Image (cartoon, rainbow, N blue to C red; front, side, top):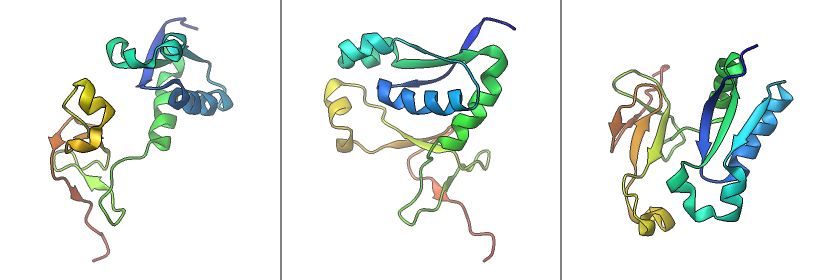
Amino acid sequence: MSKNRKVVQSFDFGSEAQVLKSRLESEGIEVFLRDEAILANDPFISEAIGGVKLEVYEADYERAKSIWDELRIYATDEEGRPLQCPNCGACKYEAVYLEKSWFYRLFPFFQDPVYECQQCGTRSRNPQPKADDDE
């Protein structure tokens, strides 16, 4: 088995990474958290070092990524309908905040999010919800 590791996801806080770590370990996947101790001592440098990196062995990467995709909560409209990417059709939008200054990191609600498709990378300010198939 290859001992090379790959990053599944980076998290701003160690507690977020622990949730996925627990789930992956319950599935028999060995997990490593890089930079967790550093951020536990100084959480304000998360942006500078790229957060807590959750890593798995390369052989387990695809399975771990699949489990992470099941657990993720993607963006929805006010009625709870998933937002659909006009480029690839996936319903995997996440809100991202483009302003990176310390003020906006502390108070992200002062800026409007841009939605980014996690499948193809398309960005949109006003993505549309997935159309109901039965109408």
